[in-house]
Length: 253
Image (tube, rainbow, N blue to C red; front, side, top):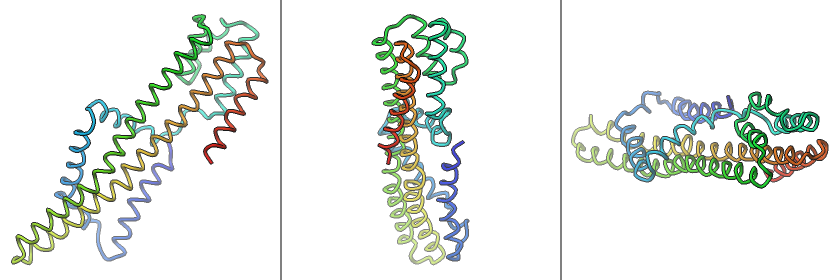
């Protein structure tokens, strides 16, 4: 699990709740079913109107990426590739056959399968490159769903605030209704702005960052598989992949 993601949500929402309590409020002051229905129902409706059902369900499935770390680090991928290259140089391409089932990464398994099938470097690069591009496009489309929701939520929150104030004005002669209307108005704004900036937009950014990391690992795997196919020296391939990794980390600064 990615504890930073869980900690981020807990800190963000917790800070609002604790701050409200310190100001003399209670958690019950922030629980307004009508405001929640307006904001979250309206945001969901606007999002469904903007995207296809497949995009929305894909975004829900992509949520797991925000809360899980990568299954392998770049260093582990490099070590795996070098180990496979060494075995191939000793026993030939057929030595990879028992290693396919042991490979933790499905992208690497596919690359090794292509090697065993006798595909040349150009075909391997084309097939794996296309899969990598398709995966990146699909996942970034899922991230855009949350980004769009983060754009709609504050506006829907303002709409909820206006509706609450309308009720206040309609019942201005009844003091018992004024407080309830104002509460709905301001809580709707909190729901809209808070959900956008504490949940939807951070989730979009987190998914994009995670996908970028995954795509980089795929690129490492691709270069490694091509190195195995070419039978390059393990030291040369290690140097190339480590330089690739260093350049990637340098670009993230």
